Length: 292
Image 1: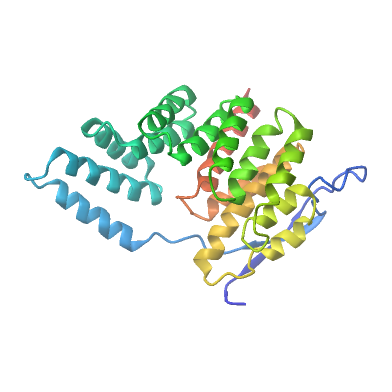
Image 2: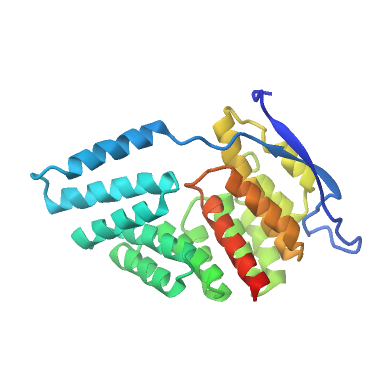
């Protein structure tokens, strides 16, 4: 084992009903949950931000050059979790150069996180109008539609992404999450079909296997470290694992356990991952439901 400071905590989990079918996720009564150190900020990103900020003070830049610098700095701010500063830079970039499809994609994500779904849809639509081949705009619009409680439209966007991209496991999972709110039986059928195109050796397939009920929670957690070469890589995997485990518990109505895993995802500090970003949104939505 390459990690010297790998820690585990015992977490009590309510067992599932014995009458459940084998195609449903298997959650164990008591498990050891792995932990790792939170991901540290990349000093190279901080240095790049300082360099871009200095460049932006130059008077000889063209408008297009300024726009690209704002965009590049915004991406770095976003990767460090500085969402407000990132959004300011993205807005500056799009005002100077309105044809930057990727900026609209980022702004759509930010407005999704702010629960401003209609505005998010507009930004994703703009990205696709500028570049209809921008596959991640379909993926991210699908996520916005999912949280905006439009599961059918979300499913269509996820299907478009999955059909036109390499078989990545995580978009397949998002399609399943959205489609489950439309037709649970068909969602499971499509998940099984899509899983056949995913390399079982890649990280992420184990999450699909968990949702399909092929492996249990303990086995899944034990598999996270397989093939990992560094602690940052392990922390990133944990961020993803925690988030999707939370979604499993959420679907079963075990909201306290779901919230615990969403909090663990946030504790990884993997700011650039959508699982980190949407773990925070999930907790905000759960807090809103409890308050109402």
